[in-house]
Image (spheres, one colour):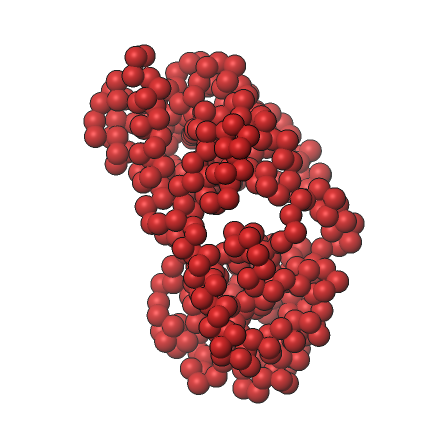
Length: 390
């Protein structure tokens, strides 16, 4: 499809947004080759030809001290993007997740009559539901990745559309189960249990020792089972190996390759978060655990308005995989749940079947292609009598 050049300002403030942004830019160019892109992003977006004013490396700061330290950088980023919006040089602004910055930019776009196309909604279903009113006022089109988000936002007057979840295409093992078992030096005749304590050091500090102690008890109840732990790219594998030196269990440590690890496991003990949805897409049964310091947990209970914690369960709308959170996350409870499911093949297959239903609810492949088509068509309808010929 060809036509007059369309200029997009595209904003992604963190690594996942950059990855989705790169794929979206590629899809937009395939559908409408005469597109130009500038904005905020990282390597994925730059590889697709986006002119980035700033890199996202310093945009994922966590902690009060770090935020204060990087405040001048944040202000410079906001000033530059504000200047670009005010310039009137763009036909539309694409905002990807990252609501702290992007909702502010959406408000500015509204003031300067620049169409806002938002991909991946802020999680208003979990907390800060008041943001929905701001979204309704400032976002022209919202493309959501969870099926329940469309109805929630439409009810409040937001032009929202469910397009499917990008995980449908990106969560794939690179090898077969048999190949992975061989690659990781596991025994194909023995049950394999994966330990996934998360991707942040804070999660590791709360969950690693708990998982290891649970593994010791599980081994006593499930003779011959073996354990494997994939180390996230954001963690130091040497630190984990050092912490496991004194442990009698021969836990296999694998750097990265989490999808291949999930694919070869019979069961997972996994930290709450997006990894639970990835495990569901790979059809691996799991028990979900999570712990925080008590002050943080109390604040979360006050601020976060959801009853389920694992993303797979949130999508399902029910507790498909058992959740053991805070005081319930004990060696005794974890061991009991793992042994219960691992000792009952019918129960395990039932859980796999329910996970498959979650996968089906996330839409069909071609997510970014659909978003690209909807974005161009939206602009075509909006600007058919204006300066852009699409």
